[in-house]
Length: 221
Length: 384
Image 1: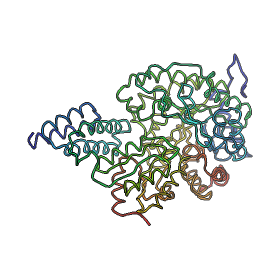
Image 2: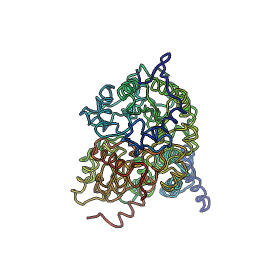
Image 3: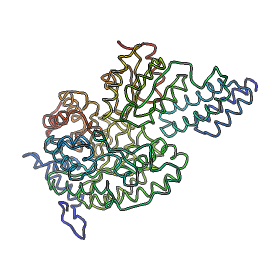
């Protein structure tokens, strides 16, 4: 595949991700790989770019949760298709900072968390997905184990805000102290600050830029 | 038995025109003395200025703390839940009673497995969704909500509250919207994607759910509630697109609202999404009262909200729940004062939280809302 053919192929792949066309995404991933496109290019310029485009449409209110979720499923399916082609030294994980992500103890609402995961992966972050209903101690263990610099927490309920507060407090006691970003329906910038978080994510699509800005500024003392 | 006299088992209610006329009389009465909560709310709903701005706390789980019962008991025992709501209104001074317990009442009766924690809101067991595969949408069966455990409980609550409140408090029956009920049985994430991939299968389920919800609303009206509140959670930018909402919920919610009106009760609406589609919801549901958490998608300020919608429906809500959780009573009073300044003139306004009062939050801020209405919400409103 020559340069323009490759660009065309990756553009079509990105578009298919954006439109949430799972089967087409898998087929286009395979076709790109067979055409000699580097697997990492398929990931970066096809899958991740498509997800970023979907995120931009969401931010502009042209996409809503259903469309964004479909795009994220298509991207995940594409990643599975590309994974076997990667060299042993490579992985579908990004090369950026590691983010430990999860829904706090007592809460099982996971749409926001799942979308944040995909948006971060699309931007090259390594994401450790802890799932839902995660006790504070488990987050801290994982931060230690992975040497992660960023903790991202989600909740949809006010009844689980104490668990979020406890998680932030415990994370603050760990060395090195991670940056903490929180999000979810009951949260606001003021509440995030009150909980001791460094940042607040209003939407999943904004998570990468918020984390990048925080990493640039470092944890607040 | 409700407070209304009955004919062939159904409550005989005053017509909307009679209620409107009564609201006019209450307005005059309110100039001379204190109104009862029911009179106050009726005035507000029909755009008459009552004695002062009415307040509703939308307490749900927080109500149980007034009588010291567990979440389990609040979620399953109609007498205990009704008593908690009555105690809350008497002690905290709210003007409205609800049959609202949690958002899983309807889904549970469709067979969704539930979790009933002692210290947290009852919720579906998400590891065992009632609709675990796309084919399950077409397997839902209608049933009689009067004979089902949780909707039956809320109908019973409606009876108890209507009887005990008599002519003092308005009672609002609460019904989760059809799409929300399906989300509780499928998981919102899967449901959203199914709406795009398998819309016909979702609609088959929505037809069955709506049939039961229409019957549920009818039973609540027959139990004597004054209004039925529909919760259309996904009709906002934090839910689905405007077109999808119309297709997947608007047309179904309309059937429920029409039944409520046919029964002579008032229609209320709650939407705690971000940037709700208020114009669409007014078109499809035609509510008398709307409780919001955020400005509609076509308004950029409270002033614009009042200007655009202030004579089409009464407005409640928008005192942020995080403020109720974090801020001092003085700050809450100030927030309420600013909101009343814009939304209260001419009636059509009820002071209320954006959504459910934080279940474990300090109740002193519930008192602060009432205090704010007493201090700054007395009609005629003072300038500035």
